[in-house]
Image (cartoon, rainbow, N blue to C red; front, side, top):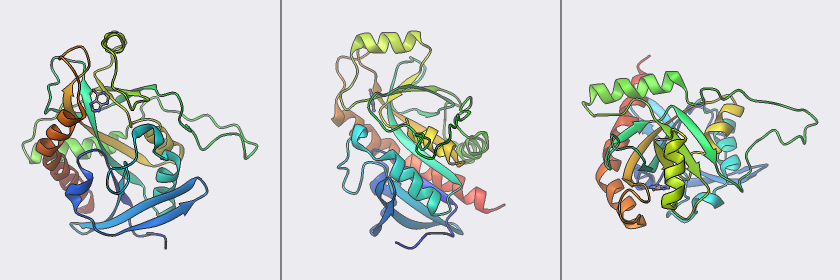
Length: 249
Ligand code: HPA
């Protein structure tokens, strides 16, 4: 695939958002970490790249996603800013199913994923600062968009990333709450860290699809998908408004 060198903005579309953008054509992009599929769309005056995190047709589970290939293909395509979305369970009474959370911190409990581009192969040791892993600039742009659209958004939240693909036990959720985490998902890591390693801005809108395990009776994939059907269109609107407003500059 030719480099999409004009597009400086990308959307990483998570569960329930991918289909809403209605992009029909995807092209395979080969990286040294493996292949990635990228689509193109236009938002306002901007060319935007879209990456479906779970693959075309929603076929790749969280622990099998090739995060390194995905993020590398965006970098190679000239992307500087990434707007991501993800479905999450809530561990906080104040963050209810249906709410949106603009996460500002992350705690990584994944286990078996390729975490870094700096694996020592180049003969260099590189440590990356991730004190504040999400871009303040993009978070600000998203918050402005939610205000303009009169949509409620929790302005902060700590995202805990599990390995999946199983949901959590009630005991795990009790522990994660004690650690100060607010929402739980399976795809935020290492995506956010890889973007930082390559010097790209990254922000993520978390859509609360369910109460985390042990808070309600049971967690099901169906309730996650159902809530995404309801709230996905709003998350999509916010991302579109945010991207258009960057374009106005
Ligand atoms: N746990 C992990 N990932 C999730 C959840 C959850 O409760 N809901 C949506 N993604």
